[in-house]
Image 1 (cartoon, rainbow, N blue to C red):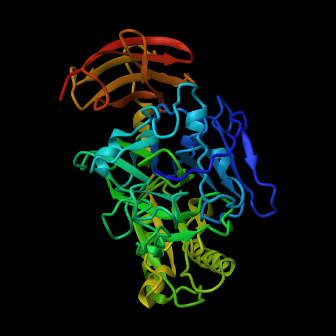
Image 2 (image 1 turned 180 degrees about the vertical axis):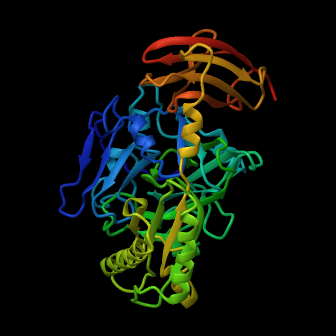
Length: 499
């Protein structure tokens, strides 16, 4: 058991919190019932070009501070805003790193039945425990699920993992972990995409670090992707974090994929961990190119101009598509200089594409500086590969949106149609039709005694399908009820059978 330092609980009523120090302008916002920081808007803002968000759900946690929205005006992690998920409370993350062992215990304080340390209630993740193996136990889990439709053949998004377990508990059983599971066409079962670059190692405290400081020496593991925050310069409380990481996955356009974002404490419920997912970074794209550079240069060499010419040619066959342009550097030199250089490189590519006839409103420009290495900066070859501008021809949802708009049923009203298969074992698909005038649509799954099991928010309109996993349900009969703007729009019985 860890030696703990207990402090007073932070008030759960706080909505907007930030440090008073001049440079620590990292801010967090709890989900609100409506407005810019509603749960629906927070999750919708994760999705960028080429991806349609169909629906989402959040598994029950003991804390109303377990997740929320973050903003970082200085973009010190390579991200300006996005979704924050934590095993503690988001309020404790703002400001310089003033504690080595933050354990907010908002999961405990949010519910009077939460017992003392070492005997917490079952806020666990069966998916993460199965994934970890070795009978490892999870605590204070947060799971957010999304159904999305990519409109191109590659799906990607960006994130940072951070933890208070660094560096004291590197190499121990307190291996807090984040996973990004995907299932759908072309994916065998459920696959975790949150892995260390160029490996199959899941991202966790033990897989990315700079070694440990426990009783005996722990060898660093993938330190190229680790950032120490002992000095607090990142404006966030975690002792250590990963670099900005990118997930990539080949997918089938216009098919529905189920995404599951899960984070949990491992081994005990102390020392918080979290994951920050960049806003608008869940995108799909048709082609991706890297324009490489020599040191401290931003001019485009002739071979890469030819590559960009080929991209422009293909772009002109993809109506309504956009092109994303993201500048990067190696880690030599000052961070501010590298940020400026990456922006200069990205804008040089932007200007070249404008000259070739790509409209300005079809170009999306960003610059990451040294925050997002694709390769280890220890070698000259790795540094050369990191001095790059990534150019992606993004998918677009015109074809998908047009098909949805043309869908009709015999009587135009919102209805829950059926689920198939029924009975089911691992998963069933619930089919609904939501008319365009509905502002808020939810699917409530409950048992026959009326106890709510799951709540799924439906984002798209017209005919839509919602995947429901049965792995965590006991065998029996459940009720699926469609709620449209607060009014019931019908129910069906669904039957879960044992594996």
